[in-house]
Image (cartoon, rainbow, N blue to C red; front, side, top):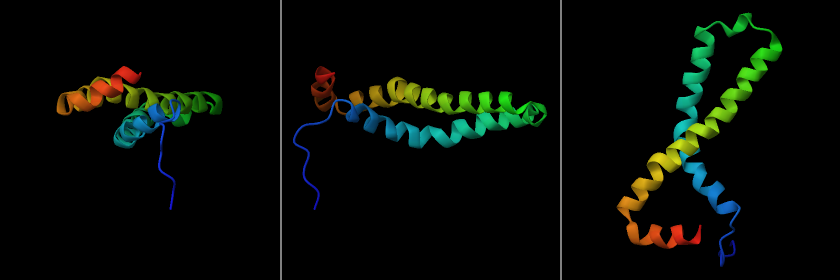
Length: 92
């Protein structure tokens, strides 16, 4: 049996809250980014450029998840349950 959490961890909580948007947006953003690169002919690029584009896609996945989290998910959660999110927002 795992111990219960008595005090939330400030560094871990935001990362845990980002896991849901990452799950929802990762596959879609990956398909769009790498599909675009394939359509533009990334095979013809040198290896270094392809790695740079892969890195941009990797970081872009986090950016898309953050935009989803703070632009959509957080406002919807506040709207659906204002009393619970007011307490959490005051902790930030």
